[in-house]
Amino acid sequence: MKTGMIVGLLLILLVGWIISAQRRLTAMDENIKNAMGQIGVQLFSRYEAEIALLELLQPHGEELWKTARWLQEKRRTVTAETEPADAAEQGALLSEAQRILLEAVERCPAVQENKNCRNYLNALDSYGKMLQTSTLIYNDTVSKFNQSIRPFPMNVAARLLHFQKKAYLEMR
View 1 (tube, one colour):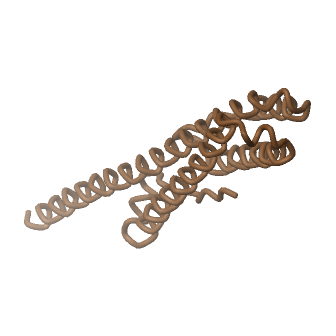
View 2: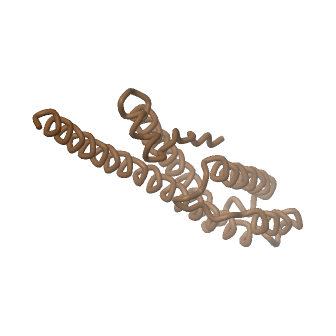
């Protein structure tokens, strides 16, 4: 009888601990998704600023029209469910478009004097910094999650609950 009670109490404690671990890991997983969603917002804002600047500069070169079409064709929305490699690919795409834009602005002094152009360039710089910050937050959140599922007994609970190590985001 005493053995049965002890086993029953141990099972109750084990189930309670698993439920607690599941809640903790789920909260951390949601934080990772929120961080990726924030990266998606930053990438979207940067995309919109680049398209607006491309449209503003369009009369100054056929290459810019081609860049705008290329960017629109290659762009994919980054959401909370997006894999880090896909988000990094979108970031690289926008960086390449920004490089082309900056070269076009440097070649055309009249454009440099345009107030709207300067505003868009400042916005691109600002979105780039916010994206960098969001990437740091995402990677920090992933690091905390990965560190939490590594030690015993949390690694057992993570396997039972199908939580796996998350990938870091490497923006260039």
